Length: 129
Image 1 (cartoon, rainbow, N blue to C red):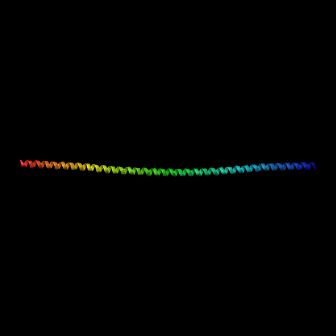
Image 2 (cartoon, rainbow, N blue to C red):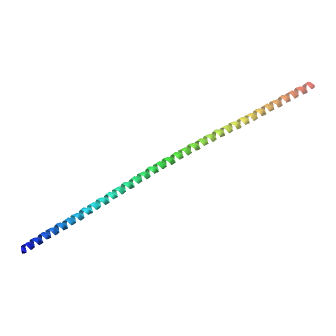
């Protein structure tokens, strides 16, 4: 009877040890699963952060290109305005020079007419004498 109790106690102790080991293993597996889930969440969060960062970079590059294009267009427009103003000023200068030349020509004609009148007056006076 005593040996049965000892045997029963030993089996019970072995059963408790197996249960304790199974519980320890179960906790280890649960902890490993939890760690794997956390790592997966962290990986997904990092992938999302990377995707958003790439999207921000893409948008920033697109914005920079838009600004550069707008700047180029503004520079082209300013250059066109400068060229147009230069053409206008050149035309104004050509007109001014033509006017000055015309005024000089009128003065030469006036002087020539005055000289002709002086010569004719001198001839007329010479004939009268």
